[in-house]
Length: 478
Ligand code: PFF
Image (cartoon, rainbow, N blue to C red; front, side):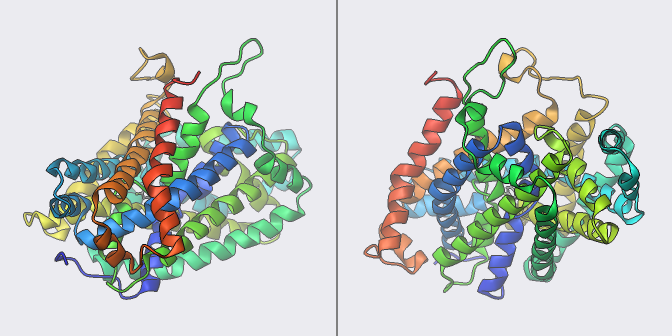
């Protein structure tokens, strides 16, 4: 067994809360609905769900197991495990890519979480109640203006970004049990209850079923030809790549976040069972969020493809209209920020754990150093929505010509680094690790049916799937 200087979760339940806390976040409530909207609905959802089942679940089990076996930060775990499997030390790069991806994701994640925080006082003061007395057309102008004026002001965004990063650093300072565990145990259930209240509201809206059809009627044209104009339609693998990337992003896979949480897992815990719970909870929250948001979209004549602002332009309408809307609205945005908070922690923890293991840093120093670095990188996202909104760093490449810094960081991490990280984890576990070690860590036996399915998926289907989606995205099949 490999040794660790880190402490462990106090129970299996604590791990489930932590991993669900990492998985459930802005990815489910902010990103999944707006991407579904952008890529035209059902086909995106079905590809997403397939990726969750065929890649997400097997990779999550593999990633937790790598952490539990390595018992260290992703970088050092991979170093130890590569030595154990008599493989090249280059496998550490997998840990490195994760640490970098985590910081990059957190840089924009914190800014968007800041938007959620900024909406808390707006709802608490009843800013959206006025919607009740407005004609529909004015409602749209009003909610557009509210969002646009928030992101147009860089100082405002920086203040909220700073508050969110400080809150994240505060929890990280507390360490595994003191900080992470205590915060998580009450946040998750509260968020879930509020989502259920919103689903109940959504079912009373006039066009709830239109939302359901939008999400579940499968029309591949929308996914495969996302850039259609009146005169031309171009086949593109972007939608499928985006759906796969979203599966990895939403499940926190491929960058060591789940690995580092696995490293704090008590020895006897069942990995298969706990990961299944996390995957189901994460998927459920995304689907519920989609149902709520699209019911509001179609009942108020809004645009499903509104992009990153979608959740901020739809939910306030619901809260403006429903009984106790200000109360529920305030609670909702607080909980959204909390869900983002519990994910943010896991984005930075792999890097913090590594700095501590190098022994040159205490938790305080590591947290401050990485927090400030992430905060600075976050400014790229802040400015992408205002003073640099016209700056497209990769303007010379047609596929990226209109992307801002924020778009590029999001694309690089979600669509490339996470799936690639997951691919290499799958290859490492299913092709290079000793079977006895895997069986011991999973408390399983290779004769067990579920185990055999998992191994088969991880060995063949997952790598093939990720590979094909990548090839498709660079246009090999078109
Ligand atoms: N899974 C989180 C979400 O859906 O919001 C985001 C995330 C957290 C991605 C941790 C990656 C990660 F390692």
